[in-house]
Length: 328
Image 1 (cartoon, rainbow, N blue to C red):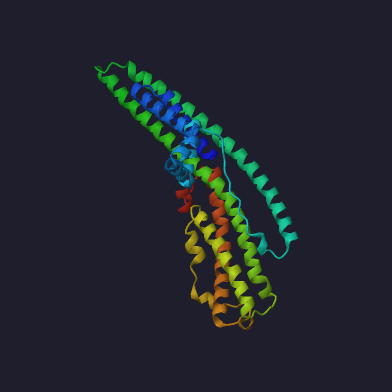
Image 2: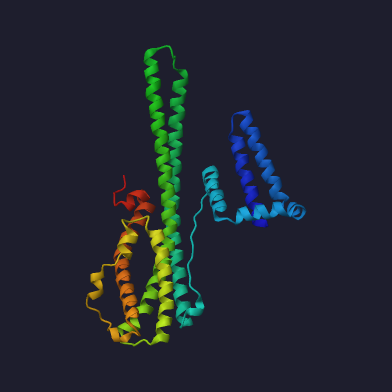
């Protein structure tokens, strides 16, 4: 209830800022009315929900949607230009770990690594924010200067009409530059968040892969019961890999195709694990497919990391990263 009230008041604040910025009377009155409506709804949400439960349920349902919060924070960014960043931690149920002491050590190290990553991300984000504000201020001053020149020109003079046309074109070009800069900043913010998310997911993929391969490589034989346990870990490995590919596909060429496409000829290559270590022929096939896909994923990882860093810190767009083109 409190988070919904805060969200409604935040929306009211955005309408209030836009009303203050509006120069025409009608837009200012309309925006002010919206601001007052959202502010009163947020301030009296609890008694309003108790009196009319359907309204409270509707508001709670709206703000339970991730898209509603995404739209709210994106609007706050453009209206107030806040300083924010986000990240998402990824962890696996501790109950599936065989060694609790090893898990605590791993989590402690991961926390330190995350703090270092977020410190670096915060510094990079501050630099992008400063550069973006300086660029916008410079462009706004140039637009204001050219607008003043256009206002003073005598439209009856043919030469001055030519100047108006030239300045109008320049203003349009400057506007397009602002739009392009904004898109690159948004791509950069997305990539910074993806770096953290994919780092956690990559660590989980490698942990699962080691559990799926190391004991077989050491010569251990699997009966039906052990193979079912192996399949449970394999399912989790595949879920993590799918999540990684869904996020990483924006930052390199043909990420999913290069990882998941299996050439049948590879099944016949030399293997360090023998077929008699498995309970049946289908288990042999599943294991070999796992090893082939994991090896191909290992080859794709450096390309995705390189693309994320270029989008986050160099100015490359996601489209350029997906098609292997340099930033420009």
